[in-house]
Length: 310
Image (tube, rainbow, N blue to C red; front, top):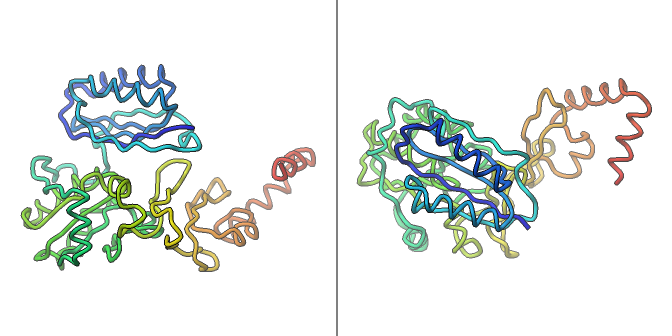
């Protein structure tokens, strides 16, 4: 059994390079894997390891003068969801392509999961905006949430005109763990949205699901940026499947990576179609894979066939 930690903190870090080196030493010693971004504005991490390693890492963070009182999202995992450890210094801990427009002191208020759930129960007059990538929305989102009008969150600045239609409404933004809503609300305020009418779901989908997963208003699965690709939110028989196979359009919420390494597209594919297309996303990619198979030596093809049948 493994455990994962999803976390972030917006805080000034004077020497991010030094912090990166210290973090690398700690994580290697604890045999943690995952991805951590550090900038002058804070830290953004998603790591996995043994329960003991996660416990010790949390102790290290709690004792760190910069990283105390982080709202960790911790979960069990049957697999180690990360292939390696990557720790980098970046200009932004979440990519917005609008860094010069972000005033971290001008973010919207948090709404806690209990209040948000109560608003949903009573049908509060509000607009719920999903601040994730469109492929995340495709397999799971809050009921009646506004779909992102672009493929990637980093294109957010280009969507301000689209969201103008909600300018006079009460707005609640959400994302996986909360970090993308931090710069998003600040950007909206920069472009004239009323800060008093805007909220940010504290802890995001993950925190909401810890309490309301089986009885709440989130439908489908929550996409994850690791080898799991998605986690179930509603674990009862009432759970719904959102998304459609991109090949035959049947209901499907299983993401795959196209086997053609030059494509490597993330796509929704049902088991039947993936078997027919040899785990590729379209006929062109399948032809490339088949041609590559024909170019292998007979011995290499035999080894691959044996591996497939294990």
